[in-house]
Length: 118
Image 1 (cartoon, rainbow, N blue to C red):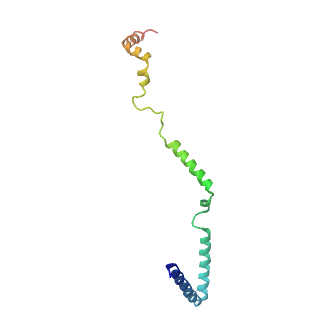
Image 2: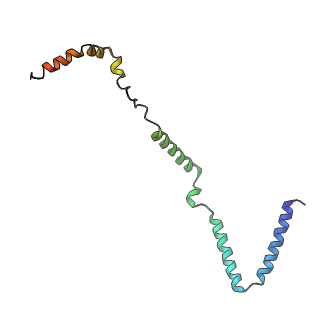
Image 3: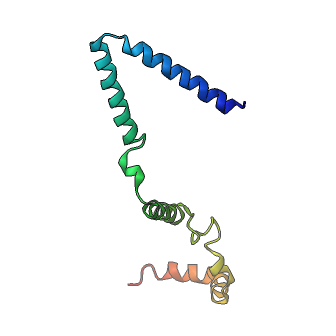
């Protein structure tokens, strides 16, 4: 005899003993036990989770997709941000600006001379 058959026999014997004992109880106690039994059966039929948890799978998949979209859109760092010191690379690589730097002293002198003109 395997364990499952032995368990079944054991449970059957316990049920039989409890039924015998409950038949000898006071009618008021029997009534309360019956009420409690029905309440427990009602709560069991309602389930452990709230009703909103039993929505169709497509709704949950849609919610998951929206959450992933929000996380990836707002969670990713801004790729257009240039690090410190790199914003002048365009100025340094252009040839027009090099002429300005070569004649910087002339432009400074010109600015001093033109301060009073105007």
